[in-house]
Picture 1 (cartoon, rainbow, N blue to C red):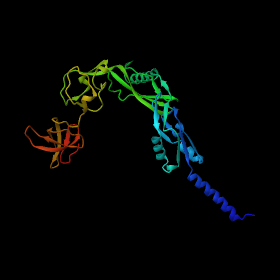
Picture 2: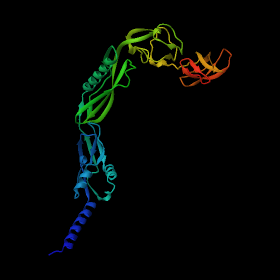
Picture 3: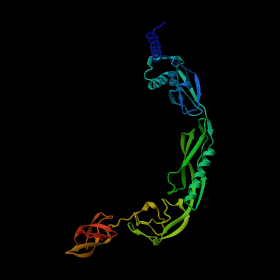
Length: 326
């Protein structure tokens, strides 16, 4: 009968021998002459027959991603040295254990199908029309430009759509179409449309100079085509006090780009200064020499040639010195 020590030794020898065999197992790679794929990237198993005594290693090496597939409907040649460098990058320990069979290169052709231009153009048009109708009174959208059916890999096709800025509407609007196959993004492209959008606009009654604070009574509401106006058309004034960044002529349409939030104190404006002397509160008036918001200090001047000093803004056109608060 065999001793327990002998049986254990045999078992350990078998395990060690298997480990050594796996660690030193060769990998045979037999390159195909040509192959067809239907994915954006292809694996080693797509372009070669892989075999090894170590089945686990064989499976891992077979799944190594070698490169990007050619465009759908096209083919490309991939040489052995490129494939080998990619495998060695994925499996640095293989080294000389790779045995190459077959030719020096493989031709890869990407299969797929055509994605109808009508499908993605109509989808973009419906999206744009819906978005514009939610924002404006009337929106008319027409196709613009020439497009082709798009080659895509086989699989389930889906699309998403977006527009960068619909507040600033022009005569031409681009809808970005994202195309996915089996949830993987394949392509992104702009689809252009002619747009006519109608709504309310604010037309200036009289000429105004730069820096003027604007109010509702300076404008009259008009109805017209917004895409004809250069800039982002304002249909109503913001709740905050605004001023002009540039002059406007009577009849001009108000756009967002030429207005800005007015500071609490504007340069050149007449301001009220609160101060105190011997426990007596005083109010004087001065001219602001710079813009300033609440909490900031600005330079002011009393009279045409009067003294200049700094005062803290505490409210619109109201400042304080010597710690007096409103």
